[in-house]
Length: 111
Image (tube, rainbow, N blue to C red; front, top):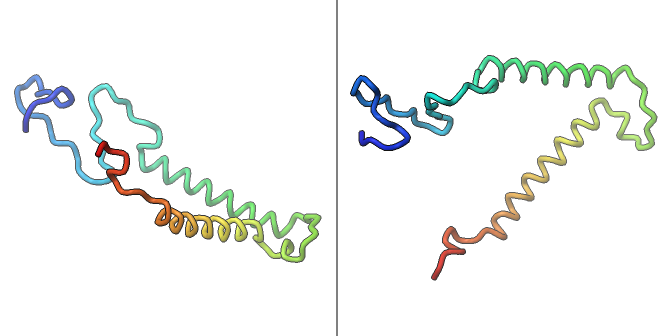
């Protein structure tokens, strides 16, 4: 391993460990602090909280009376389903639009 400014040799004279590889790999230097969302336990806790909020909101949808005008608005969990279908259609349309407007990688390079 060659020496560079980002990975200097350790004081003991031995080479530092190689940074981890992979899409989620992040090698932290000595001056970087751990972020709250770097811990898997915190992320799992947040996801559990959000799932619980979703369950509570769907349960409230069964109990709370809404003044609606359209007949489909009486369907249980109509708005979450409507949002999910809308976002899915948006993502599919964006994929098609990307293929339509995408430029070659060197499009803006000097010719």
